[in-house]
Every structure is written in C-alpha cells, then in structure tokens.
Amino acid sequence: MKTIVWFRQDLRLHNHPALKEASECGDVLPVFILPDHSSPTAADWWLSQSLLGLQQQLAELGNSLLVVKGSPADVLCKIAQETNADALFFNGQIDPVSRRAETSLLENLNCTSLDIRRFPPDMLLDPDTLKTGAGQPYKVFGAFWKSLQQQTIPWPIAAPTSLSCWIAEYSEMIPLEKSGLRSSLGWDKTIEETWTPGETESFERWAHFRDQILNKYVMLRDYPGIDGTSKLSGFLASGNMSIRGLWHAVYRAQQEGDAAQPEPFLRQLAWREFSYYQLFHFPDIVNQPLRKEFLNFPWSDDSESLTAWKEGKTGYPLVDAGMRELWQTGTMHNRVRMVAASFLVKHLLIDWRIGAQWFQETLVDYDIANNTLGWQWVAGSGFDAAPYFRIFNPTTQSKKFDEHGVYIRKWLPELAALPDKHLYEPQAAPKEVLEEADIVLGVTYPFPIVDHATARKRALDAYALIKGEKEGSS
Ligand SMILES: Cc1cc2nc3c(=O)[nH]c(=O)nc-3n(C[C@H](O)[C@H](O)[C@H](O)COP(=O)(O)OP(=O)(O)OC[C@H]3O[C@@H](n4cnc5c(N)ncnc54)[C@H](O)[C@@H]3O)c2cc1C
Image (cartoon, rainbow, N blue to C red):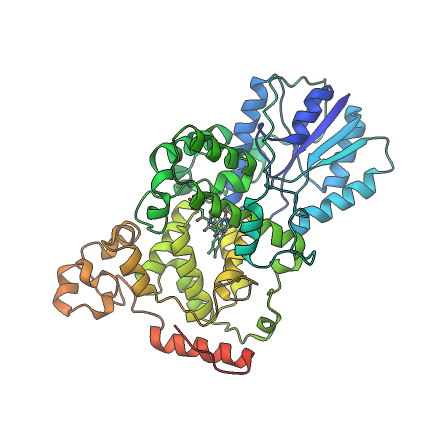
C-alpha cells in the first residue's frame, strides 16, 4: 500500500501512530502543510527548525518530507491524485481549528477511494475516558488528577526502523528555505541562540533534566533565576516529543533509581493534559471566558500601557524582566508568566485575550490549550482558576522568588548595579543609590506605570461590578 502520512503538531518519529502503521503497510510519503500566516511567529521559527530536523531523520531512513501550502482537503486530495496514493493517515488534534480541518478533509475526501485513517491525538488518554460520576467532563484539576492517577497510560509506540518510499513527484513542492516561516527582519536571531528544536535535542534535554534536576524539581521549579525546570515545553508543543513518551520516561527513571520523587513533575504534565482535555470538551474557551460573568468585565483599552507591558517597561522589575526574556528567547518562566499575565489583566485591566495573542506571537512553546487555560486561570475566568480577588503583588513575588535578583539582573542589565534591597522597587531607592547605580528614573528605567495599591483597588472594584457585590481580598 502507498500511504501519505500527514505530519502536523507531531514532528517526530517516535510514538507517531499514523507513521508507524503506514510504515508497516508499505510505502510512505510524509507530507507537511505549512501554516497560512502573513507574519511568522516565534513558534513558526521553532517549526522551521523542527522541519529541518525531521527532514534529516527521514533522509536517514531513506525517505524525505514533502512540504506544501494550501487547505489540507485540497492539497492532500491533489497529492493523492498526482502520486497515485492508496491511503492517507494522520494523527488527530484536539483544538477547534484542527478539528474543523479534519472534518472538512474527511467530508471532501470521502468521495475518493483513498483509505483515510485518523489516529489518536498526543494525549495521555483519549479525552472521553475520564468523566465525573455524573458522566460530565471534570472542571476541577484536583479531581481530574486523582482520576488520572488511577488509569494506566498506554505505552508509547517505537519509531519505525525503516521507511520505504515510492517515486512520488509533486508539482507544488515548496523548498524549506522558502517556507516563509523565518522572519525576514531577523528578530528571531536571539531565539536561535537559545534553542535547538527537534526530536533528537528533546531526548538530550530530557536526559539533562532527569540527571540534574528532576529530583530537586519540587524545590526549584518556582525560582526563575535557577535552572530548575525541564524546558521541554517547546518540544511538547511542536510534537518533537510525545507526552506519553515523556510520561513513561519519568516512570522508567523512577524504576532505575534516577527519580525518587517524580510526582510533582508528573502533576505538571497532568496540567498539560487537563488543558487539552478542557479545550477538547469546551472548544469555545479560546475566545470565551469559561465563567460567563466575565463576559461583562469592564476591560480597558489603554494602548500605551499595553505597549509598556509588551516592551518590558512597566517599572515593575519582575514583570519587565519576564517580558524581556520572552522577547529575546521566546519563553518565560512559569512563575513569571503568572505574574506578568496577572499584571496585564488585573493591574492594567487589559483583556486576557490580548495578552494571550501576544504570547501566541512571541512564545516558541505556544500551545493553544496551555496558553488559553493559563490566561483563563490568571484572569480568574476559568473553571478551576485563581480567584480574581487574589492579586499578585509583583514586588513581593520578586522578593520571594528572585531573592538575590539573579533573574532581574540578567534581563534588566540597566538595574544590575542596584543593591538587592532596592532592586525590586527602584522608584523607592534614595537619590544617591540611584546615582551610584547610574540609573535615571524615567530615562534609563521607567517609573511604575501604575501604583500597586491603586491598581489593586481598581481591579477589585471592576470585579465587584460583574459579581454585583464586593468580595474579600488577599
Ligand atoms: C499565562 C500563561 C500562559 C502559558 N502559555 C503556555 C503555552 O503557550 N505553552 C505551554 O506549553 N505552556 C504555557 N503555560 C504553562 C507553563 O508556563 C509552561 O508550560 C512552562 O513554563 C514551560 O516550562 P517547562 O517546560 O520548563 O516546564 P516544566 O515545569 O518543566 O513542566 C513540564 C511540562 O509540563 C507542562 N506544564 C507545566 N506547567 C503547566 C501549566 N501550568 N499548564 C499546562 N501545562 C504545564 C508543560 O508541557 C511543560 O513543558 C502558560 C502559563 C501561563 C500562566
């Protein structure tokens, strides 16, 4: 049998059910359809590098990747006809746009004699497996996690050891260097210095995490100045690494004595599963708050403050360090993501969807499920979210989680010479301390764009409006 394998957010060879099945049925033609954006995002840069890596892996197996553009239904139909393919296999995806593409593909190609097979998406479990006693999807993470822990997660599938191909000419093939995934402005240069995408690198990063960090993860994971997390999110988001493969690798590490305390890390992987699960069951959450009272939230359209936030010029060092890290590396530590996102939504009263859009453009690990749920959690509009009235104080957060200012000094070199005592609130430092550190407030570093206490009260008042009552605060 001659099978087209449609690669999507699964740019790897291991645990790729569609590829494995196709390789066992006969000849394989791997195809990737480029996204249709006008301007490339940071995740597109990751994608471009992953495709190069995948192309090389396929070449080592005697095959190659056909890169094309267009709507999946049209393009795949055309390829099938021109190449005389017998079958089309692909792994499913759970986000609404991909699901619509799958439906359209199945409807439009049903008329051909092509054998079309959809394989399961990259989740620990089929999203219909876990349900409450009443048969409803879980809305609370704790109960979901408890139920997940009682399940047996299926083993990942091994990568194929050979991939035979057939002579398949296709007239509209696009060379990867013309994919349009790289920015012509070169803003992704600093991102390139930080990351090496691809399946091979994902295994190396996992090995580093397993050997150096996993046992201390629970103690280190909240401190942005420390190498204390896996940094695997880009690999998971692009599908360079499969979640089932990672889950079982953690268990293997435990059995082999390399992981005494794997649970806190598995719990974070379960948050990823929960995000995917919620997006599957509630696809409107990409644009709609899960809690309907937030539909009436009085968001502000303060574009000047939004620009200051994007550029890391809010005058709150932890927020600014995070936003600069994001721009330069395409990532941001989870603790800082929470603080920076909360600052946008609560201190500036700017709609979480605007923040989510900025993260979509700038994160190399952009993942529609994790990003949407992350923002809804911070905004307080998710089912199992941080209560709105719990407003992060960026100054106390930085004192607690960046005690010696390692993270802030790294991303805000203009504040590096300030003593720890004044690093978190430069505007409160005495004049001579600022002079000594060569800082001119309002020139080399901004004054805070909002006062914390005033912003906090404004946020609580706005929340009381949609609740119709005043809530307590913490
Ligand atoms: C506002 C906001 C937006 C976010 N946007 C994204 C996004 O676009 N893509 C993304 O992958 N993560 C997102 N996250 C979740 C989290 O910040 C990142 O997954 C994490 O920082 C990645 O670093 P790591 O791989 O070192 O994580 P580790 O701590 O090593 O965790 C391992 C893996 O578990 C998963 N994970 C960890 N924390 C979470 C979480 N809170 N929610 C869901 N999955 C989690 C990720 O796949 C991560 O790679 C967001 C969080 C917030 C608060």
